[in-house]
Length: 123
Image (tube, rainbow, N blue to C red; front, side):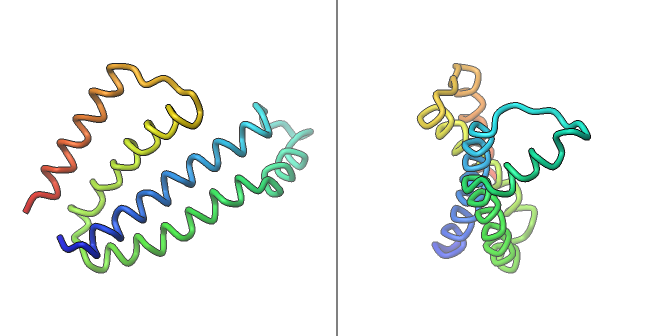
């Protein structure tokens, strides 16, 4: 794969991972809730007006555009497994930005994902 293809792949995956992080930050501000008839509209309003959630959704939209560019250049059997790089990004970002735990089991999983991505990308 060329540099441009790798750059597009990583950009799309990074945007997708960023979307997850923005959504998480937004939901931390809103807090835990459950759907009931009484709170559907108040929660919907909080979600719709939360700038972190709006940023997350914007990242998703842009990532779809980038992903379409990727799929126009790479077979889906090679491109789609690369999405798993997002698991690595979100696990590491969750650790540093959200204080989430990164257990030895998760680190082992990340290493397995790295090996898998390498094997799929290898010509």
